[in-house]
Length: 133
Image (cartoon, rainbow, N blue to C red; front, side):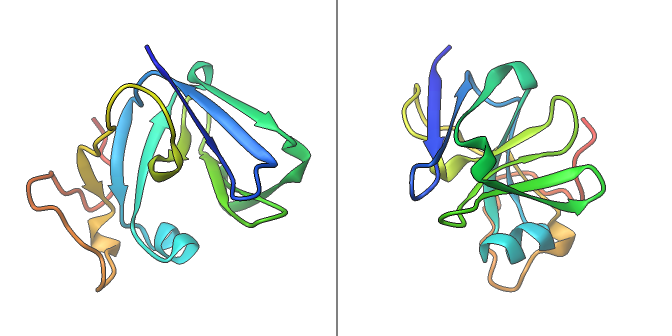
């Protein structure tokens, strides 16, 4: 299993994930689109596969829904990761560096919330909400 790292724009936050995510998606939910300005490529890792490094006190935790925290760097404002309960750590795939090969999203989620400017890849399955399996 290979490791991948990521950091914020200013470098005060960094993290490492081990192996491939248990899920990789294009998320079209309204919250992701408003948070970043576009649909996002996201990966989900278990708790034991992610290490948060750097100045953890320099991270803003925004509770976007009960129990769901979107974390950004206080200095540069970059989105660094999201937690949505045990075993559900979300990392922006576009920020990852290193590792073996490209992590390709396997589906689109929250397609019912899709914005007018979102690009869809028709060869991937589409789910109106988060898939249950």
